[in-house]
Image (tube, rainbow, N blue to C red):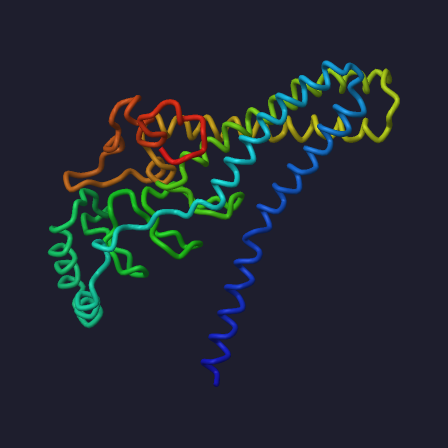
Length: 287
């Protein structure tokens, strides 16, 4: 009976955690929807008087908004890629590993199994990188995400703002999302600033629009500063062919630690993320 209650409680907590994990995404969506309303209706349709200026502002705004929303969607719903089945322990190997009580024998078993796999990295102590939750020998650059409860290829980090693990399959979309977020905030800031000055001087009458325009400028500037720093950091990582985890913890190869072990040169490092077709670098599709 007690075990049943524990299982039920554990299941309930997991369910609550899954629901709460969407809260940061909901916050971002609400902020973006409000910014859309504030910019399109309160600024362009109410505050801006010139018809030509309205049209130009709205065309460029919606072009940026489409790519911004598209990349955010792709970052959220592109599932992180897991290792190939050959990296998982077979049923027989799993049974042998679990039944073996001597740690040194377990390590040797992993070494023997790893000989058949294309892996070159090790733990800090030189042992084979093994996930005791997924029961697999980790491929190079693969890490276990405690939030997603899976091993993710070329894992960078788990991002609560997209409620997803960022890695091999969606890192391109995440970088594009950061880039278009920076562009989105910059465009709002530059186009709203003139009307912020006019409201400040009392040259425009609408009190309701004044609140939206002033707050829109403040929010856009705040997000722009934080996003441009984050985007710049990830650009630096891409140029070195590093992940966030590798930047904080130097990967260890069979020959020893090597902080630039995956560096292939600037152009090839970019191609590792965005692909070889340059025409697709700015578009959130697989390349």
